[in-house]
Image (cartoon, rainbow, N blue to C red; front, side, top):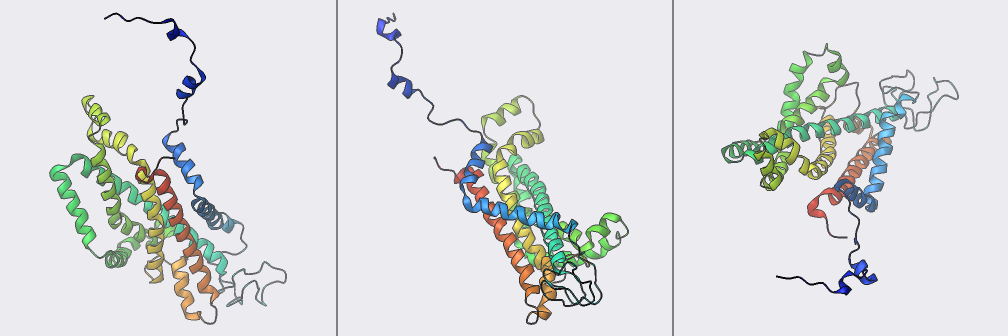
Length: 334
């Protein structure tokens, strides 16, 4: 078959032909596209800055604050807002939110309490991410009887009332952990705080495991997984380097949304007296202590409760923004 060309075939392209070949939209990567979508969500951006301010107040301000969270100032019991006790020197720094019945500065205790809540949320979410992602990826990748057995374990944990188990584990774990109280890391964290971490590691990873299992089952039949198997890559290498990396958006969103849940659970346990150990404060334990003087000193209850609500609300709104930005199922063409 002979191919013939005309002289007009070699003329420069016209303006219309050039515009037809233009790239209509610049190529962007996963992270750049996700952060661009996140910046467009004004509510998520405001929530992010609120979280940053809370982090600064919780971790940076106590280093310069004149009062310590466990310092009991004699003669400064039940001082009101922005006041000093008669026993303190004139012109000394006022107690911004007053003091409690033991003479401890409430503002200093709220700062440390918010630090404890944020640390519990972050560490617990990382534990949930580590355990849940590996467990769910293994169940989804191997399939068959392995998947059946592993997911029945998940169903069993789901069928148990979580609040009841959390309370039982928090109570029963304190005694064996108290035997290690001589160690520095146990005394610094407190038996109650370590118990909370263990409870989250034992119970709260099942939701993450189910999500990751579903993602891995939809990804393991792709061509790049088949190519990795043909090149002799091991199962855990494929899970770690190929499958989990392609689930990164889902992992980020799910982990972020676990943080407010962990903070709420820790505050609930501390409110019941099963959380952090004294003298460490928690926003939940401070709310519990303020109940006895709720009508006389209402600000002692309002301040930690309002801060706790603000933290949980901001984290939930920011997590929703991350989900809209990084979850492929939420994306629409711009």
